[in-house]
Amino acid sequence: MGCRQNDGTVIIEKRVSKDHVKFAESEAQTFKKICNNSFHHRNVVLYLDTIADKDAISLYMEMCDGDLEEWTKKGELYAYNLTALEICEDIIKGISYLHGQNIIHRDVKPSNFLIRSSGKNATIKVSDFGLSKILATDVSSAPTTSTSTEAFMAPEYHRREDGSLETSWRKSADIFSLGITLYYVLTNGRHPFGDKNPYEAPHNI
Image 1: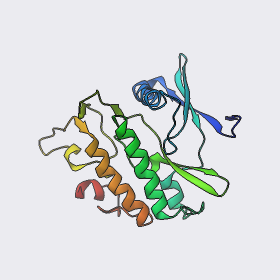
Image 2 (image 1 turned 135 degrees about the vertical axis):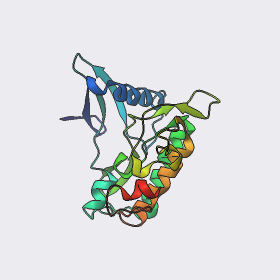
Image 3 (image 1 turned 90 degrees about the vertical axis):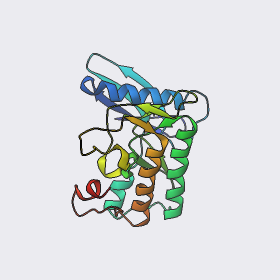
Image 4 (image 1 turned 90 degrees about the horizontal axis):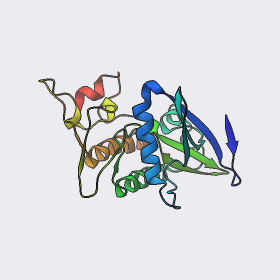
């Protein structure tokens, strides 16, 4: 369900069960840092509030019209008169803004970029900060044991032959995933490392 603000923005509730409280808290923390002042970047999904009860945490944010993966699979990626160049520009601006705020997204992929339409115009917005990490000032990496989506994950974060994992995440990890996402947009849904089955891309990376 959604409610409409005075400017026409429809607000929806993203309800996360307490079983996944770590991801909800991470997303809320990132949202609060992004929205810590009156400025809101047009290429980041708009966040309003977080409310917790005994069963779940609710995040309140603007409602969008779908995500890049969904619209690409439907063959309607350019339905809102956005060119491939404009889509890529919005994606880059969103990630660039996060990095400027010392935030690593850690799960950059087409399904985490939402499309928000307004009349004949549309904007691409980065979303889903459940795996994100906020870097301390003058720190270039953040330790974590959780991993992101393998098909979009930088090679250094895939499990090594000895079973170990790189646990120090850097902004460069987002840049690798960003490159795959831009390729996906420019080729109308193809993956640069293969997409015949779910295992081909992770294996080739």
